Structure formats: C-alpha cells, structure tokens
Image (tube, rainbow, N blue to C red):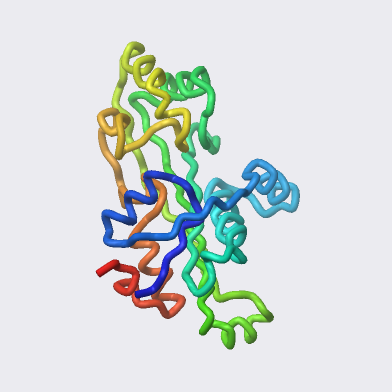
Amino acid sequence: MTRLVLASTSPARLTLLRNGGIEPICIAPQVDEDLVAAVAEAEGLIKSTADMVGILARAKAEAVLNHPDAVDAIIIGCDSSLEFGGKSLGKPHLPQVARDRWLAMRGSNGKLFSGHHLIDNRIKSDTAAATLGGSRPATNRVSHATVHFANLSDHEIDAYVATGEPLKVAGAFTIDGLGGAFISAIEGDPHTVIGLSLPTLREMAIELGVDYSTFWNR
C-alpha cells in the first residue's frame, strides 16, 4: 500500500478520499493563502483563477514536505475557487458576503477550479530527486467544472447562510452538504466541485509512476 498524505483539514476532501477507498494521513499545511497569492500575483505568476489554485495547492503540499508523518509518502495539496462574474471567489467567511454572493449567483452559473499538487516524498525517490536538482518529483494539475445554481428565494438564501455552512467553503456553497439542494446541474467532474478530483489524482499518480490502486486500504 502507498501512503497518501492530504495537506488539508477539509472534512469534504477527507470524506471524498475515504469513500474512494483511501484513508489518508491529514496534516494541516499552515499556509497563509492570502500572502502566497499576493506574492505570486506581484511576481506576475497569477493570470487566472486556474493559476491561483494551482499555486496555492503547491504551497500547501510543499508546506508539509518535512513533516515526520509525510516521510515515505505521496503528498497531495489542493485548493479551490469559484470564478464568477470575472472574479475568483474563495471562502466568504462573513454572512453578509455569503448572502451577497448567493443573491448574485442564483439562477446563474460559475466555474469551479480545483488545483492539485502531488509530490513523491517516498524514500526510494532519493535517486530521482537527485537528478532533479534535489527536489522531489512532483506534478501540478487544475481541474474545473461548471456549476449551475438554482433560483433561490431570499428566504432560502438567508436560511442557508444562517447554517454557517457557506461561510467556510469556496464559492459559498457545497454539493455534498446542505447546499446540494441548491445546485441544479454540474458540467464536468463533480469531485472537482468538492475540492479534489479523483480522476485527476489518478492521472497525476500515473505521471509519477504510482499505481493508483495501491492507495486503496484493503
């Protein structure tokens, strides 16, 4: 079995992996996302929402690289953001922000981007790492899906915001929680909307020479 480290404390990503037969080791990455994004933007590295989530996913994966529990494992870092109205929308945090977003989003659609960064931190990768100038083999991919929002009433928006759920998630909605009733359709991989695309993880694992089935807890 290949050990997988999830550089995240997201319950949704953890549940997604568990439902897919994978029991990851969860490590909080301790990354200042706003600072990382600001620095990357100042350096001209962010031109789109896809760029941003890819950079943040990498920062999270690399932040746990030297953690004792991440030794001899594959590390996955993820980040998600909704692109709506020409803007990238992360977690709203505040009720009024979440409410304003839903007032704008209802009856419309947006594109959810999820960045993935996979690092091969296994001990047997030392030779490969040396050939890469000391860095570990890694790959970065961004998946996306179009989300169609139902035409909610003001009362439904207020009731949903009052639960607190939309304050803690990218775009102010979920599809695997209370917000699932307010999503009328998804074009693309629904796992992407949850925050971690299993098909993308499989493709990245193959790229690094890892048999995806060895992640499964048998």
